[in-house]
Length: 403
Image (tube, rainbow, N blue to C red; front, side, top):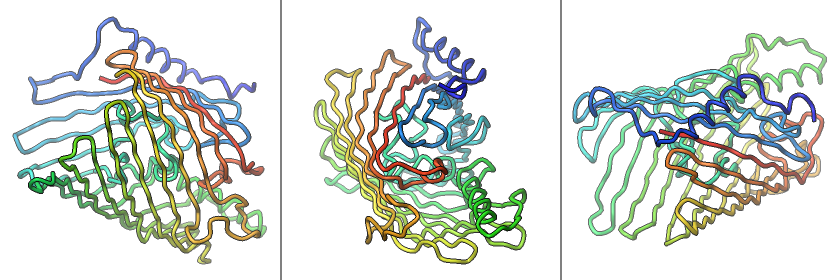
């Protein structure tokens, strides 16, 4: 095993800090400041990931401990209607932030009434059932959400936007109630966001192909706009929840006078359904993303993708959950296997995974999962520049602590 398989000093320190917190003899709860007006919460996770045949989200075939997250959030209830809050996030993942601390979300929230409220700042974007909760590791059974819809390579970009939203809860008499959210603003891409790194890699390949010498030092990835809506249906039937979400956005990459690439998400629609009964939980989501992509003003992609998954979980006891996932993604909805001349020989991703979650104590959780994958869609080519294998696997272990 190469030296890259061993954790860095920073990862070792974080891992030991995690173990120290997890082994505290008493449980920790949210820290109350200024009475109950201000609350401090946080989480810390450390994991290990390894893949076979293909890299997943980075150099993972030799194994990596780059699966670290630390979040601290604070909420201040200034009045019964006005709340200020935010979260600082340290994220060290192969395809996300590389050891930086950034504002995960930061809002001023004025709740006029149950049917209407307004948030301004860096607000979370709803996308399916779990995008707004994906940093809350303890709320879900899996380490990695289904990649067909919750693509980890876009996690740092599509988690939140700078702008605002309107939200509320509407009663439907005997049918239950609906939570709604209307949002809009701009996404701020960081230099280490995968969207920026992918544009850089494309310019490098373009230089090599045409013997050019374009410098990527001034490459600028920007979002012109992003907006959307979400409806979450809470019927009176216990354990049932449904959702419908929509996202529209427009991105560009510029290099001096060259427009390197542009991506227009005409619509990303996700339909969701979740049902819990006794020890069982079943979740299914379906999504289509209609987009148009250009590279150096040449159209390279125009049409919808297709994605869906089903997740079945079983909890024989409250602290233990077993889950089985089947997840499918197709780069083109109307041509699942594309043409023989396609650069991506396997432009789909079919993922069968099994996972275990064990709540060791009130504040900490252990997870383990293994994935067997057919296909190489969703940036597999970017992470495997020497070529990809159609059949591959990856697995992960993770310890999480929260208060």
